[in-house]
Amino acid sequence: GSQIKGVAQQTIVQTSVNSKLLSKVYSAQDSIVFGTFGVSTILFGIFADQFGVRFTFLLAAFLLFASAFFVSINQKTLKHIKSGEINK
Image 1 (cartoon, rainbow, N blue to C red):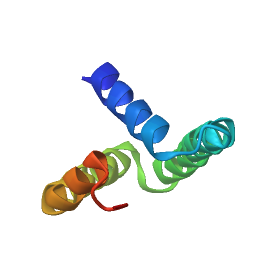
Image 2: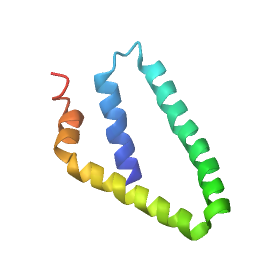
Image 3: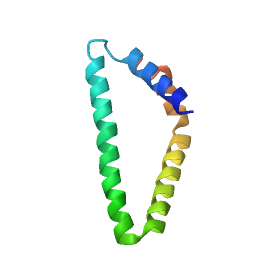
């Protein structure tokens, strides 16, 4: 599942970005991913210390379901973005 998602994301980036800017886009993308991972690790560590592990897992589950809900609600728009129809 993750590899298929990665291939789809890479294809979208490669087909929608000027080839001269591709390295900058990939650098920015990686910086955002790694920065988000670092910040979320620190935040969830603080949440676990302050509120307990159970609350932290419930918060993570809520965020996961909220993101799944967001994707399901915006599925039509996301399909248009994936196919490139938004940019036309």
